Length: 288
Image (cartoon, rainbow, N blue to C red; front, side):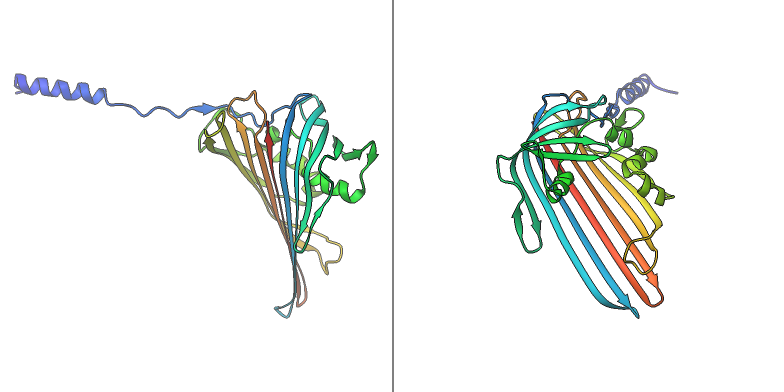
């Protein structure tokens, strides 16, 4: 039989047990990664594009040749948005060069002098760059097209956005159909299997406003492709990775974007084998 003292102790135990603190539920965020830009928006663009190509040739299982080429393009430019598409992607912008260099394994070249004003147009068919209303040289246009892109718009969100609010650390499926559109018809047609995931990796509260960093990885494990100069059709693989930083407040534009691709190709003919690896990376900051 319970005594009065025992009964009171039992009641107190139940009261305190029920009052034990519960861990708060993690906050869910509606991360809209495809953010539209507006006309007259201005920002400082700091971007670096890197490409490494390594080619190895084997005969009788012995390496007979091996070459590696490294190229990087460094650009710092003040940007002003002139016009945008319906979904907020840059259609035309003007940039003023602060630093524009091409760097190889042996040399560094100034592509354009500081202060050069470049008009830039973007469309699905490509980019056009002019200085004083004259198109730039094809070589310079090719370099610019790797570092100056039509930013903003819904495409990034089409590929990476979650269908509902997500919590820190959560992972969801990439929209592979939208990613195939980014790759283009020719490249996408080669890849029968393509999968990808997206992760809400972390929150950075060190700046003026907290930002969310979202990472993603897409992979096409194996496909066949004919490459000019290769002794036989090559077996290829592709890995694409993204890191995107946006303010948690969806009203504000992106802060930074990093993309990289690793492509591996192997061709075998008899006792000969050719291996090629192409790695590219673009890191951009949009400072306002």
